[in-house]
Amino acid sequence: MNRVVISASGLYTAPHTISNQELVTSYNAFVGQFNAANAARIVAGEVAALEESSVDFIEKASGITRRYVMDKAGVLDPQRMRPKFVPRGNDQLSMQAEMAVAAAGEALVVAGRSATEVDAVICAASNMQRPYPAMAVEIQRALGISQGYAFDMNVACSSATFALELAVNAIRCDTARSVLVVNPEICSAHLAWQDRDCHFIFGDVCTAIVVERLETATSPNAWEVLGSQLATSFSNNIRNNAGFLSRCEDRDPTERDQLFVQEGRRVFKEVCPMAAEHITRHLASLDLAPAQVRRFWLHQANLAMNQLIGRRLLGREATADEAPVILDEFANTASAGSIIAFHRHSADLAAGDLGLICSFGAGYSIGSLIVRKC
Ligand code: COA
Image 1 (tube, helix red, strand yellow):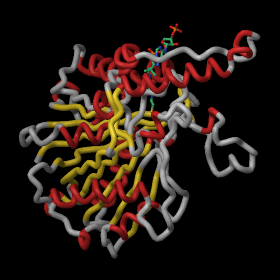
Image 2 (cartoon, protein in one colour):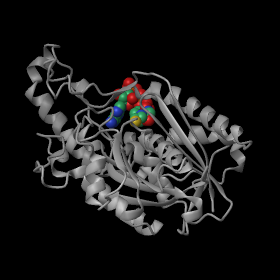
Image 3 (tube, helix red, strand yellow):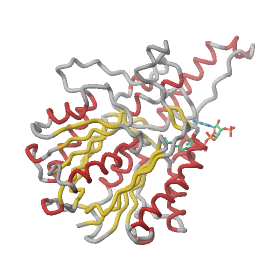
Image 4 (cartoon, helix red, strand yellow):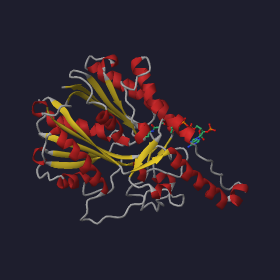
């Protein structure tokens, strides 16, 4: 069996930034218009008046200060409140493929790998812009990779770590020389921007990772994968009912359950202990303790969640150096969050340092990788 490394990562940042203040100003304008338009029904008790959002609440409840998005004007237009994308023809590169090609380009350069050396592309994200042909196959062609295979997969916020396990196993078993994992997350398109409880949560981004054999890796920031562990446990607390059956159920695409819906409090309460126990068990399976881990690249959904997981793991507050935070800048970027943290905060560590990548989210699903700097 081959020893395996994550040899490089890449990041595509969406072109527009929305600050909490911009978001709240637009949301509150929408609330004013809604309440004015429905004044009589609100007085008659037929419709509940909407309440305003607040920058203070968002920052305290989530730790998010801004987010990057693929389209800003459509999101901030109180009459629209969703991104506006121009449809592309079948002969043009799809939006998710474009993001993935940019992130992958960076990762391949850092890894020192050319298209002729990549035997598999896995496009793993919480939403795919079409069911088929697979985004991954389009990305494979756009990168000029003419050998091997490519496929899409979706495990919501854990898509990246679940894909990494497949990539690691392909290298370990010698069915590929190097595997590219890409995570184009356009969360702005599945977010209900009219819902005060969650309108601040998500942002758009794409990450990429190159996985290859230890013996071929030349990058200065290669991390040997010592182990990976996945777990799932069914829950309806994070759910999106949009799917190819929606049309046959005569569902209106604007119905609330056709977008991201969550029971945020329950998610918080249930997922934090699950993640901390999962990580502790995974480390113990390699005779390691959390205190031996130099850095945790955790899923980036909520700052308080990560702080609680840090306390459960270490018995004290984890420092920003031990568990870096990127959600203040990027918000929740679904499966890409822990990979952005890794991408931004791994080059400074020393050979022999241990790290742990962990994602958690809908399913529920949890995926972790224990890595050691080469
Ligand atoms: N602005 C102002 N007030 C708001 C608000 C907003 N945007 N949204 C909610 N509130 C109010 C609520 O109405 C509630 O008021 P009440 O106490 O009078 O009833 C109060 O703030 C608390 O709301 P709650 O929803 O309980 O907040 P919270 O502290 O649970 O924080 C989340 C909300 C979503 C940030 C938090 O639950 C969370 O992050 N959960 C985990 C989410 C997660 O990781 N999901 C994974 C997605 S992949």
